[in-house]
Image (cartoon, rainbow, N blue to C red; front, side):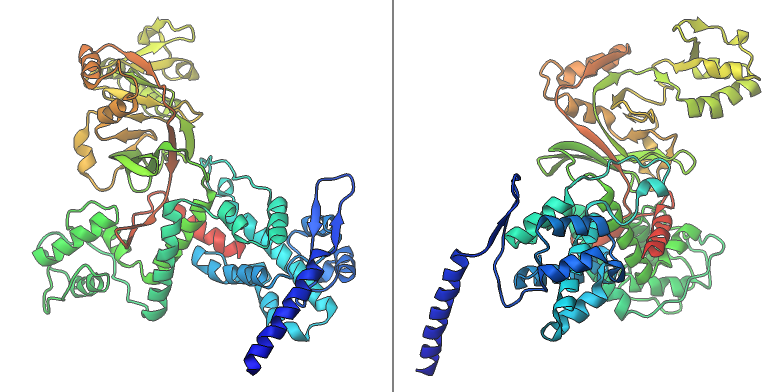
Length: 545
């Protein structure tokens, strides 16, 4: 009976509160479109007078976004923004969980925010007002980091050319606090890519592994351990393979790289982007020494990297993972083609950027890019006057006229003024087709006559462009919306051996990205960091924290 009376009393109180809300204070900005609706609650964080005073003299608050915070409160007449309990709790819980994305609450006034929240009932108006301001400042910094990452990749990498993501954080903050819905912002700021979402799961997994596991002893580097070769490191290698779930049991007393060990090593090498030959070299040892802490750090680096990438990749696109030598064609969120690739060497890195495919060229000539021209072709002619003839390379002046190589001074700068072009044919490194998306780097997808090279696990051997296995099949797919270019017609064009350009009609972007950790079939996969980007990024993240 008593409970029923209490419930009846609560109903009356709720009715009275609802009545008050119907005549709530409404503050409108004269001459503008912004309207601010707010309600008094028993959870008010401070008051407008205190917030106004603090904003006027914010030195003690150590704000990250002082001007933006001041503008935000000025537009809302300094009314507290975080009085809604659920909104406030949702944001604080999001900050706590952000460690699984490589973003840590301590970097967003976390220590003082949590302390104030734990003692909210004891706080005075000034402390509550400070808490409101700190939450606003934390939102702006956290939102910026979610949107574009902590670091600017262009300051780390000379050939990283992805555009910065754009979102009006102030408008988002206003919408979130007006509608009391944090998801409005998180849905726009957090990367929606599947790889990013799955890496969060990997981050949780490896955070658990690193906290529960003990540091393991590094396997010493040394001579290559070939098949059936004895080596005192084999017991430690077996132990490591078992820890990493590549061996079920350890063969006691075994000191050689026998068939049992080789098979496990081959699986490990294949999963980590190495040549899967079962031979244990120092590259394999280096990866075997990657403990759970290092793998966790690698995951954090890749989460940061995915925050750098454009949010909208398009409905139909090609995505190249440079580090994993892989190309996928994605249409309507489904992978419709997959190809192995070869990418640039450490000295001639394939750049990170995005462009739209404009046309395809069958039986292409190869216009040699400046880097290869200056590093290979011209020095080649200095060493051997028959270099160009052997490679079937012609020389052209600025007017497109063919030039006799014997009239060029190969020992001076004069040779750099010409264009060098290799004719179609079996020796042409572009093979039977090149897929063009014009860009400042002279990079494109192309075929290659050296198909056997795709059998290697490590394929960073090109001069920067991306060689594609079964490139003709990819070309046929890209032209499949044009009925006049059936598979047979394209085969006939190739068979004739004459150069033929076909323009694209459907819109397909190419994204050259770089990531070394991802999730596949419920397990976290890693590949070699071929350009040493992971180390540089992690070191920069540590300095930024």
